[in-house]
Amino acid sequence: MILDLDKKLKLYINKWVLDRDNFFSDLLYFQIHITNRCGNKCTHCYFHEIPTMGDIDFEECCDFILKSKDLATRLNKKLKVDFIGGDPLLYPQIDALVDFCLTNNVTYGLKCNPNEIVNNWERIESVINNSNDIMLSIDGLEQTNDYIRGKGSFKTALKGIQLLKENNSMVRIHFTASKKNNQEIISLFDFLLNENFIIDDFTWGRYWSASDLENVLTEDDLVILFEKNIDYLNKVFCDKSHFYFNQENRLVPKIFYSFKEHLWIPFFIEHNILIDDVMNQILKKKDCINCTGTKDIYIVDQKFNIFNCRKIDTTYNNIDSFFSGKRHKLSFKNYLCNDCVYVNVCKSCLAIPKVSCIYYKKEVK
Image (cartoon, rainbow, N blue to C red; front, top):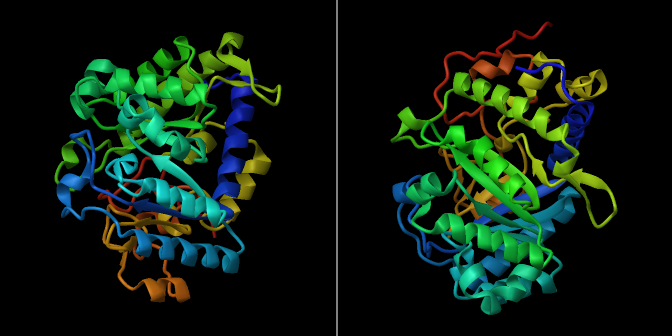
């Protein structure tokens, strides 16, 4: 483990932490599932474990978006909605839904598959070009990714990224990491870097399934991953060829790496990566960068059930009650993390059974 980090990497991490806090503080976010239609059959997709719901009702979805906009105004927050599926590009009324967002000045993003981008660009060009950002999933190098997401999906994803960047889209890549593929996070990042892809956000998160816990990464697994990733990033940040001048003429990484997993912050603190001002600010601010279930971040299914988290039962079944102010955050009663010094910047994952933690540290009263 390299402890003497390159100065650029250390500054990058500290800025990322502060930006992440600001991002959460100012945001009202809804991830709206608008369809089950999908051209892939990914082995880890949690739709395999829930009833099929079909397509979302268009008029009701528009009404939901308007109520969300009103709530954002009352909360003095920025509204962002992401459309997801299945593949949202297969939703029959995606053009009308996007037009509705544009007419009402609602920022939207897409979490989609690359299939329609590559094969039907003319049909979805307007939907893509008006989107704030596009997230595609890649879960390893070609053999591993195609085993998980379907034959040919790796090359299709690469073509999709290329086409999106040619049209100046903001591209985000997400990697779902399990015990089967976590060793390829660095391999994928390195491949994309050496192929000169420009990626606006590269992030990975733990695979989770209540019926497949043996393939869920443990916290000990995560720490090993952190060490390997930091060692690798340190080498990347020491190489000027991995940077480029963006449209604002600023020298930035070709691929922006995001530190999504909650334990990253305790890891940074324990290894003296965060400067004192940043560390003190985030440790004192309640629910700063920890579980998104403590934020105004919600998942909405096609029946307009609203969740803090799809991994555990946190459903709001009454939309009117939700928008009138009866919203609650995830309950962490009698939870190991509550008296840990890192409670405001971690909280780990409530869905994953936990009796101990490598970074657990009793708060000094």
